[in-house]
Amino acid sequence: MTTELQAPPVAQPEPVLHRQRRGPAHALQAMGAIVLRELLKFSQQTGRLVSALVRPLLWLAVFAAGFRNVFGVSIVEPYDTYVPYDVYIAPGLIGMVLLFNGMQSSLAMVYDREMGLMRLLLTAPLPRPWLLFSKLCATSLLSVLQALAFVLVAALLGTTLPWLSWAGLHAVLALVAGALMLGALGLLLSVHVRQLENFAGTMNFVIFPMYFMSTALYPLWKLEESGANWVYQLARFNPFTYAVEWLRFALYGKDPGLAPYVVVGCALAFFVVACWGYDPQRGFGGLTKRGGGGPA
Image (tube, helix red, strand yellow):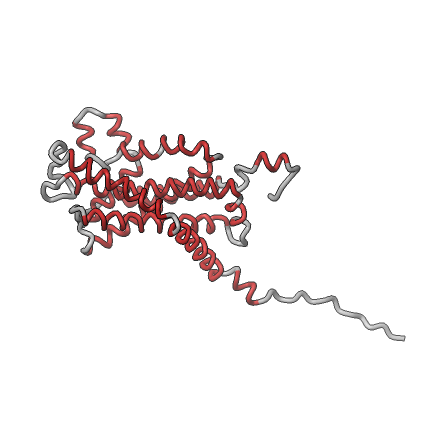
């Protein structure tokens, strides 16, 4: 009687379709889904767009008009002649749109984390930095769209900027880089803001100091000339200053100096630290302890 020896089962190769889903195509598909979700959510929040435009437009229509003849802007770089005050502060107001939307995205991240949506997202079979980068791209795209909407409305009010030129392409690059930097800052803040109740206080220590201690409303030499040396020094080390100055110089085809390096460097630093410190379990610690354990 013969006994047949059976060979051990050979492991079947992973299906081609499954391998493809884990490749670059799957990563891009996930990014597209995340960006589309944010765009659809934003399209249903018309009040968010209105509030994003009303704030800088009030500054442009009221503040700039009221102080047009009070704050004289001398001939300084990048301008070749005297400019109205509303033209000077227009890049700073565009930066305001980017700044507030970046912080708004931080609030949305905190909310999604408390509701469990971020933990569900981060269970996808993709690297966590890629998922966070997808969220950052969605935030930056919304920031750029809102900034361009503000530019159109400002042009209707009589404040025109030289976008339709070769320098305008450089200005769009500066706009995108500024949106990425401020979006990455919002992502970083969402790591450390544990509850929605703490968000308002945190933002008051971020938004207003970054905006007012910058060149968004006045040149640096004005601060130094007025004797506000400590404000002048803070403005020099404020990354928001460099985002505004890069945009301002790019609009007129002038060399922005170190501004691009500072903006890109800060964007990378904020994003890397956010990826290192982001924990989807934040906001669920008490629930996990009470429930005797939970998903990792």
